[in-house]
Length: 367
Image (cartoon, rainbow, N blue to C red; front, top):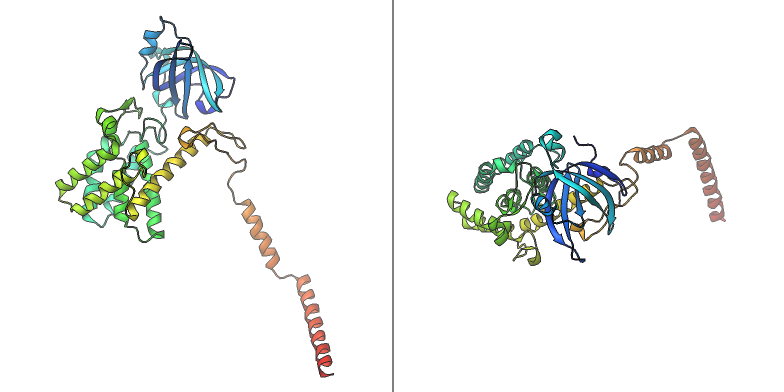
């Protein structure tokens, strides 16, 4: 039974509980001694953990711990370089008699995979361009089973159950607003670009049905999902008889959406929909990382450092969004604008005074 979650852990706290393994390995420290470097998670987040001074007798059991396993640990919470970390003293694999519910340990998107899939498919079916519609609906339907549970990454943004669909859905939600703002954008091309831009993460990374990845595939390591995406688009376009122009434009969107060569893109975007795809992708990724960090942060405090955002810490406001202040301002404005008896009396006096002043000026002018 799960008793405490990662989002609740505080520095100095000692506890015993269950977690899911996201990554694990035996390493050698600067002192020449072996230690266990392990990433643990539950439905509220992930934390790095260390078990120092691994003895030869412990090593075989610790080497047997793999991503996706559930472990029971005894640990304390420390802080290293402004980030929480666990110091593990005892660890073992879960036993059937522990009665652990795996879903308590799995981080997942806030909506069901089925609902998100239907939303994305419905947007593809609304396309007016028959070629882009055929390509988008085909790739979605052929990959439905895996899309329902696949994460968008091994770690970092959307590394969770159904994370890939959550990423795609929010990008499409933004896209459908922005095409009304920037009318130069082709809605069907942009939405198709969103659907295809990360679709080959399904073959780039491995994942179990809990959305936990244990690493990259052979093809994923050598090519990556940008190049893999180009291959899929080219093949599907030829199969469906889609024009070379549309096929190559979609391929370009896939290969350029990381923007920089250092991040895998050999070309920068060369038309508006490709440029916007990059911004939609990076915006959703960064907002996800901020949401995740701030969900574990108390109001009025700073988060742990976020590796994917240049090790920045994020501040969580101590006030909640609301309408009270806006309402007060509106009432204040209405009060100032509303006529009152006192104001009317002053107004009449002002008018009389003004008329008297004008008469005096006329007398002076006549002189």
